[in-house]
Length: 215
Image (cartoon, rainbow, N blue to C red; front, side, top):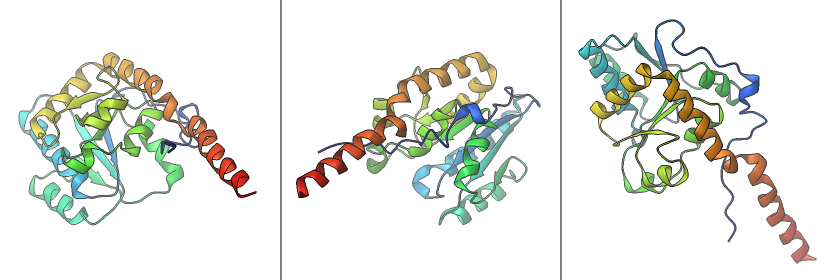
């Protein structure tokens, strides 16, 4: 058995080609989430966390841009409407893969609020690795497989499914941009081995070995 990681292709997810905006340059903490809109990815938890921050009136101006589409979109739209967050949480729908790196570097932080369920405890999010590759600070659910690849020096972990904990983490992100940038740099270092430039030769070696075996 040979394990080949499904990591980002550095030819596309290249942070040198997409300038990072200065942290909260317009006074707004801009967050991003990109996924197929499925229940298990916990976007509804993120919506609840944004609502809690607004209710606190803690002085953090926050906006969440969501990219992607899927069967759970009507539920997310209803959650946004119910909480009066139409101006805070924006659903942009699907965009081309080539546009994803730019929207990640345009954000001050990325959210991976996957729910703490058995499947996701065993799953490593490709979206998490894409955020890391682009140098975007990440707040993610504290799931076993996430943590086994990226430790707490690299990612700000919160209990999955807990909007209050997520709201607290978002507030901490806004309050300490230097720490956020340090985590993002550490995450890039820890994830370097998972990039496609490293993984592709392993994959090609398996294919070559199989071809030679046929002859």
